Figure 1 (cartoon, rainbow, N blue to C red):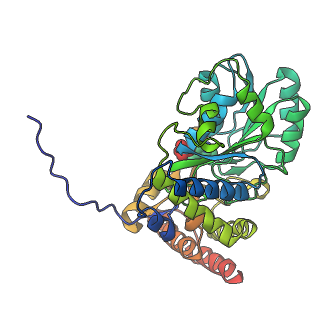
Figure 2 (figure 1 turned 45 degrees about the vertical axis):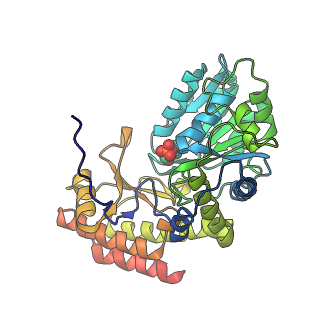
Figure 3 (figure 1 turned 180 degrees about the horizontal axis):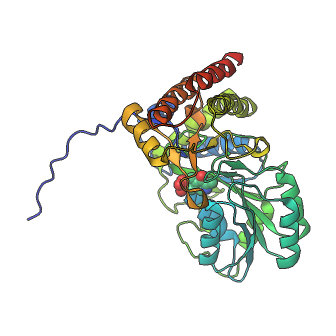
Length: 396
Ligand SMILES: *Cc1c(COP(=O)(O)O)cnc(C)c1O
């Protein structure tokens, strides 16, 4: 006999989300999600699809016709990019300086690709000279890099230099922009990025479920002239072309509610203006950074490649990272994350993404973090930290 489970009403805690994603969802996006469904082939939904595509182009700064939300989370868009562009026998050059370069490697391998590496330590960006050397040595067909490495809080600078080197070697460039799209400066066309994928629940402040992807004609030509079908039927872009392209024929049922949500989240981006949105992220995270530094803590990334949407802060002496994150969750309903991989135990990862990037959330985080650290015996100057944050926020 299978017992009837006794499950009560849904009452999750009311958290302030300042981890590596999901970020807080804007109330307008939550409201859009309670809009009644239409069919995924309804003429009114076709119109909504067009609007979402236009808004995605605006946010990615691209004219690419091939700009769509992929059903699923950021990893689905990632696998759609890698699984379609990388053909069996292709060589893909991937970075070793963070968690998500490793995921690129796994996906490229499953797609039948040979993987080669360009190295940099966790916590540092790629050096274009190293990329050039790896290009000369391996002549890869595809080059992947992570624009905003969420595992280390590092922003990859000099993107146009990387894409120039890759194009000199006829490689297609795939950029992971999951933690940069809508949060930090990103110009897909101007910077020569051939393929970019992202996620909805980071700087777009949308629930996970429909993930941005854009490909230029050069990349799409490679995809459409593959000799062997992509290994995933669900993510096969040559089939998805039937739905998101001119035909509008059934492939799989679009996640209607997530498309509504993404539309509203992107409308908020356009209302704010993309440059102003980048600036807001820099200012609010700048106030956070000034505060933690005045408190006596250290950012893991130097200023040149500091990532405003994900702030990696060194764990001070005398405290254990997980004790601090548990305390923040228990006492303040506040989520931040600890380090991963090579930086496990060494850093806190504090997201400042989308709707979570506000003066209120930054002030709250600073007060809560100051309390947690002093409570647990770290030598921090909480007053100085709060004052520095308040000063920066007051300047805005
Ligand atoms: C979150 C993230 C992903 C994966 O996205 P999911 O939505 O978790 O599938 C990929 N790359 C980077 C840089 C990320 O931060």
